[in-house]
Image (cartoon, rainbow, N blue to C red; front, side, top):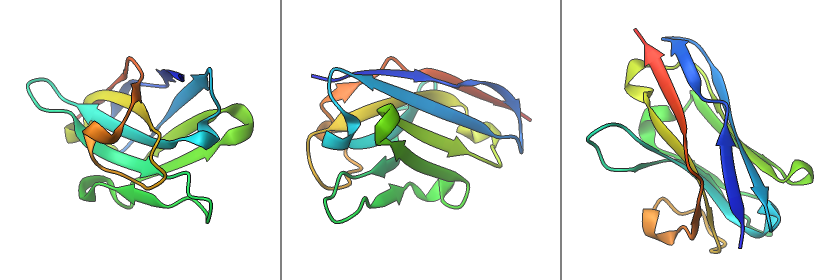
Amino acid sequence: QVQLVESGGGLVQAGGSLRLSCAASGRTVSMYTMGWFRQAPGQEREFVAVISRSAYGPSKLYTDSVKGRFTISRDNAKNSVYLHMNSLKPEDTALYYCAASGRGYASKRYADYDYWGQGTQVTVSS
């Protein structure tokens, strides 16, 4: 099993930046495809970004609304995954979750993820 703890959320003005961190324990993140999801009040949890554990080099996918603004990365030495968020918009406001999947490919599907953190709140003011 792997335990995930997110941090780095907060209140930021529109146009600002945040870096979310996801620290893993129990297993190394290099064994997992790692994703970020978010959930706004009254809405379903949605995919944000994923980085696979492909042996041929990690592939990354993003939801269309964050392409060019968000970047997912991983640091296997620190057993962590990050979500760098730039040019934040009020519609990015949500609880952001880190998740780990045992599948080798980059997946956008909520059901493909086996482990989840508790989330970190991001609030973007206009």
